[in-house]
Image 1: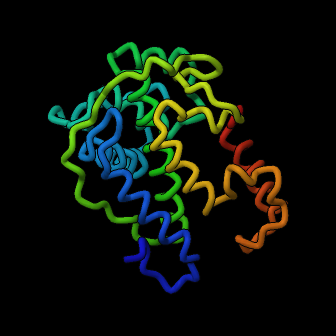
Image 2: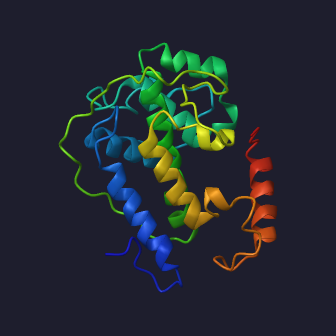
Length: 227
């Protein structure tokens, strides 16, 4: 079943990949259960649909905004809202404060992966006035939650694996499943990460690669993306 029902000429690979990502969100991760990962996606949607908060305002500090019985830790909920609505304001000090509330650094990396994917997929639907992709039933397996001693903090705030490549590829390397999901999304919404330097004339998109890069650069500037 395709992710979207629309008369718009949505490419089949976009439909298929967004549907696949929804299934991956419901899969048990290294640190979060399937139910928790879907709760992360739901919280992304809540953050986007609620009245905007200033970057320094945490949703957990707003009375009645977050349920006391929430399946996710408060630090995770606050992080989801900040990453979703104010990514340009994140700092190393803010990250340290989130991890300092007991959120495992590798669990934070997995959370970031799911939040980024959910935002990209939902913003696609919202921009075209489509129903957001539906969420499947979660896996009932429990996450292993086993720290990987081989990952460590080097060029990022989060621990990463010792792999070669640009920082954007290394960022989620402590949680390979999310790295793979990011590459699936990049391949259909941009270009394959392995083709960043070689694929300059692809006809995959209706825009040329040069036009895509102009839009990407402008978007990054508006979002104050320091990368």
